[in-house]
Amino acid sequence: MSVVRVLYLGRLQDIAGRSQSEFASSSGDLDWPDLLAVLETHVNPAIAEAARDPRNKLALNGQLQADREGLVFRHGDEVALLPPVSGG
Amino acid sequence: MADATVSTPLDVRLLDAGLAVDEALAGFNAAFPGAGAVVSFLGNVRPDGAVEALELTHYAPLTLSGIEEIARRALDRFALSGVLAWHRIGVMVPGDPIVLVATAARHRRDAFAGAQFVMDHLKSASWLWKREKRADGWHWIEPRPVDHSDRARWE
Image 1 (cartoon, each protein chain N blue to C red):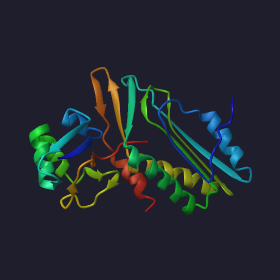
Image 2: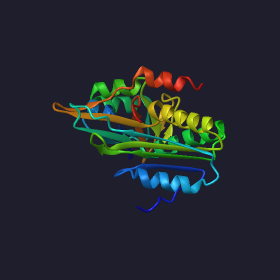
Image 3: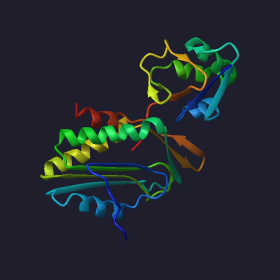
Image 4: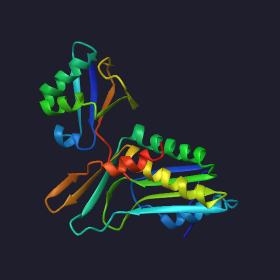
């Protein structure tokens, strides 16, 4: 059983309708298509689309990832979806 | 008023409650007695009739270390002796301080340029998301093109 937490930052929390999700997979680790599928099925298609959009960045366990399509998400991993910033 | 104890050469903080401007600046000045020039910038929540509150959210694993990196680059690039960057997170109301940046250097031009560099990068390259509360609810603020052009002038 793998449990992966996904955090939605900024406006993505409005799109997801929540600030985070936890996905449990009984078949082990999740790859990128698996993650998109659970986002689409268990949250909504719009957040899966946002996760694909290169304008939104992705961090895995606090580290920014340049190539998201090759990622594998393991038990206890934290994924953060980061939209363009508007700070300062 | 007690001076804040400021670490040197960098003092970068994310503050989820008040930002004590006078204490920070007094502490910064005390930390760099040899600086010929100290420049500070204070950004406040702009009073705007329609905005009731402003909220900044962050992502802890990235935000503080990202601002530290901005401050470190300014330190090296402008030969600064010190940089202070304190940023509020959480909910603020108009008139509240959001960000305080101070730089210390031998000469004023480096201190001014260093403070501008830090602010231009904070606006467009730090992991902070801003939303405003108006009468009809909360609205996320989109990045503005000018924020990116302000940063691009340093490249």
